[in-house]
Image (cartoon, rainbow, N blue to C red; front, top):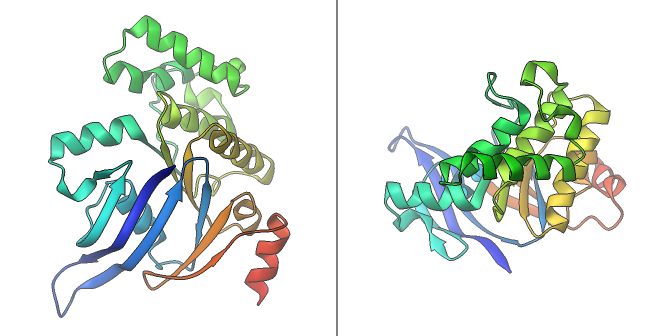
Length: 239
């Protein structure tokens, strides 16, 4: 099932002749259960693509369809509701609320959607348990490792059955072991039916993807389906 469809989407800042084209005529589809990795040099438009796909920025041309909703045609209130219920975001800076435990951080989106606090907490603990995070459920962020914080952030992003998870360099500040744990968790979310878009510079992490697209100067310039894991990505980058 198609979760996301970008139809010739573009994003520019400013006005001619001093405008900057951050995204240029990008058409892209993402299916349920697919992990899509986005690669490219710094300034190529990777984060802008993620922001436009997730409704954080509106395209200045083209359309973005999320589960059939044309994000550009929605009012602010309706857009906020659609995004809150369907899209989760994970960034390199984890942004867990420092005064809340892991379980409280994860339960918060459910409470914002109107679920009773006790039910939200029960759902949060159940999710953390299923992800092997029982031991940190009652810890504050400062009492967790960086890898644990990022995995809790992913739990918060997917709770409530969101159909699309957008991850912008989620392993960038982690050691290799913690990074692999985060990638394994993202892969598990795909196996459960969630679509994941991952921005990464790490070829080995891109090797977890079903498909890798390459951006340059705001345009999609190449696409690869890794046949043999991370090694195939490494070979592609050496060409």
